[in-house]
Amino acid sequence: MNCFAKRVSVFLGGLLVLSFASFGTSAAPFGNPEDIAFGQKLWSALEMNRLVGEKAFHPMPYETAPPHGNIVETLDGRIDIDARNGVVIVKKNFGKRDETTVEQVADNPAKYMTSITVMFKRESGYDPKNKNWFWAKYFPNGSLMKNPKGMALAGRVAKGSDKACIACHAGAPGDDFVYIHDRYAE
Image (cartoon, rainbow, N blue to C red; front, side, top):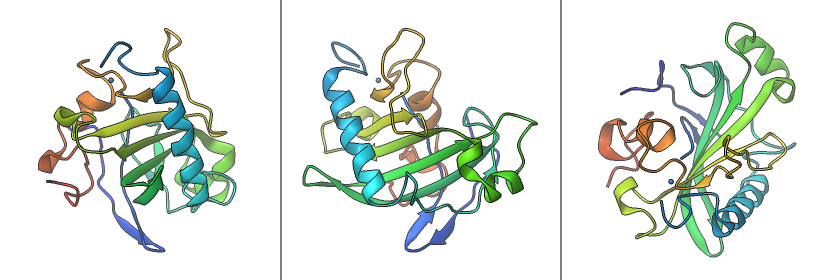
């Protein structure tokens, strides 16, 4: 199952511009206090590295297929969280289908941003079946979004479901949960 209509990669200041998502298992499969705390640390690290926030890099936006909105900007790189260095993929989601253009987003990204979805590669053993990715979905202000049941979208979001981030990204080429390239294939 391919969730993305286009595959784009562009280098921007040492970061590769690319693709992302969000979804989990355990007592609470996701959105538990530990996931929320890690999601908040993740957001802080993203801000410090200018991947989100007022001073964030804005690569050229491009059109894509659902579920991320009709236009996205994607960045990846490595960041540190609690002395843990890991790969991060950030997808900034913009606009509503058939209502927003690439040009509008390029001219004023803050006006059209609807959410930010992030994958962060955790330590070995975190979720081996799903390549140890931590998933999070944020509002543009950095607060975690919630599902209809009120669970924060952080951690192993929707693990075991046949829909959402993990299910979609499991079909990525290279068996690495990443659609744009296979640099993170093991």
